[in-house]
Image (cartoon, rainbow, N blue to C red; front, side):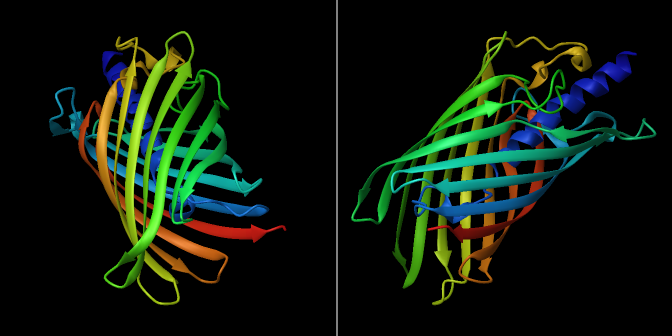
Length: 295
């Protein structure tokens, strides 16, 4: 029984780490931080894969899972954004995840799957400088789609406020862009959870027709809760108590190709470089971006 509880604690701890990584991965790249034309829809389905066979412990040391533990996850998401006016955009994110955890001592992998938190956001463009540099603020509401399933998230309603600064220019004769973001998020429930995340992205177009682009990103995530107690049986808990206090930093690279003016494909790879109380692994993701003008 104790062995099963230990496996369950590990499972839920690294499930949340992966869910957060997938949510943090860049799904819509260049569009985020820049204005969306009034009447334009941005539609972006994506798929992500994450694998980890090591972890960062509470002292930030990297070590293998006990009993040769292995975690991998496949996640699907659909992101959409609509330009209401020159100042406002409305967005929605719907994610679905399938997760697997295995060790040498168990015959079948422990698996979980399901819809996660739906996010509805409203973005306001505060100001611009010569229509090259843009400042925006985005408020997001977080709605759980599940009950008492710690493998899919906290199960709490929440809100997020994100500030972004984006701009474009030239480097080595090529069109370039950058996006700098910082977001704070709070989950409201019997035990509040506070999160802070940042992301810095810099990208270059690789050809004169603006069909190819490459970008690099560095980002981080910090989470804390007023409850640091590790529940001995997370299956009966609505929240993954083992994963409410953790942090990580990651680097990633992305390649984008435009098939047409309105259809693009982005391929992204990333890895955790430092962390605390979280899995240490790598991720791969692919997303399609489709723009549809209704005006």
